[in-house]
Image 1: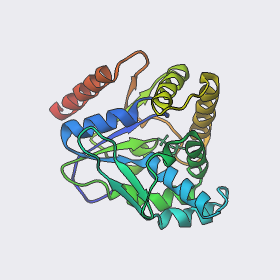
Image 2: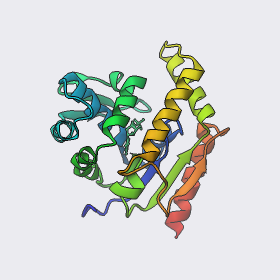
Image 3: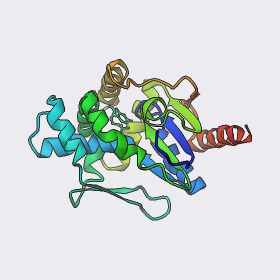
Image 4: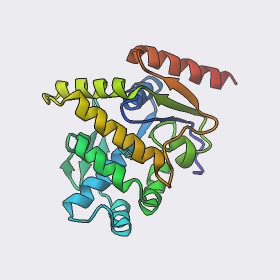
Amino acid sequence: MTQSSAPVITIDGPSGSGKGTIAQLLAGKLGWRILDSGALYRLTALSAAKQGVALDDAEAVARVASTLAVEFVPGAADQPVSVNLAGEDVTLEIRTESCGAMASQVAAHQQVREALLQRQRDFQQPPGLIADGRDMGTVVFPNADCKLFLVASAEERARRRQRQLMQQGQSVKIAHLLNEIEERDARDMNRLHAPLRPADDAVTLDTSGLSIDQVLQKVMRIWSEKQAG
Ligand code: C5P
């Protein structure tokens, strides 16, 4: 655990559960920093692919992870963070389905996870941190002040992803997205190292059928209750 005493709220869960959006809104409301740990796995995978490193070569991919030249550039109000890799803007490139699938492949290697561990803990700085990922509450910040685990049905997550892609001008069939989501869930939940699961002291929140605003309100209430002790 890091020496910093800045508070941490962890938000873990499968892709499409709404954790990225909620993490961003919560960070905005509290004025805290945000760690998008999935972006680090996506960047590792993208960087390895660009360098011609085989994704199943754990040691070589871990070397890529430990030398990632990444920069997160905060956007204006309500705008997402821009991501630069070795000076190149890869904000959109890392968000593709194929990059997500590659990320989940490299994330299965323990050496890669270790290579990214301290980089993630370094984000814990005052006034506080919202950490978004799969193992934020279980491995990276086990002493976090508040741990949330967001879930939603695979069908709902596929629909959300389809809407998101449509907004970006891409049309992808729902069945295809559902398939990809289920495959990625299975890989993330069944891997040996840091599998996707709620920490014992996490509060699980099912976001199916809830609006973003409703989820945010519930999360704010959970955080207020934690603070009240
Ligand atoms: O959250 P996001 O979809 O960007 O994550 C991409 C992939 O990175 C996940 O499917 C998962 O395999 C991996 N990941 C992880 N641990 C984290 C965050 C992401 O293994 N803390």
